[in-house]
Length: 117
Image (cartoon, rainbow, N blue to C red; front, top):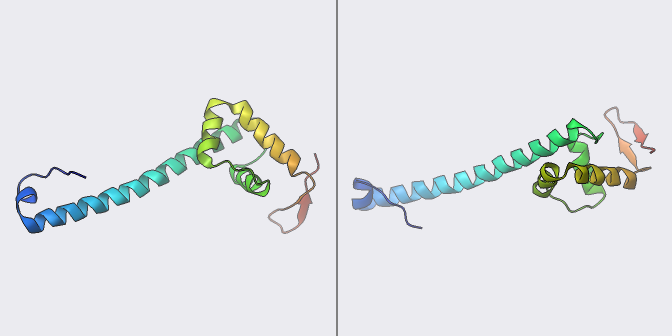
């Protein structure tokens, strides 16, 4: 990795090493921040399409039901499906609901609720 510095940061040994360390730290921090930002973007896109119409689930319930039905779709793929083909996302969510019919689901009060089609 080649980094261009000016002045003392390119001539003096101690400041060169300090600047390189600072640049590497910033690069690492920003890579992690970029990952967080993209995850937030994908979650926002999925949630917007879900709450718009056609799906009677919240985002957290959709993700939970995806894991329960062992469907291997990550948030990036779900966001792309939500943007490019909403009907496909609706079909996926309906298939998940059909697959999980009759499986007990816990709600906030602690009682067990049975979802019947």
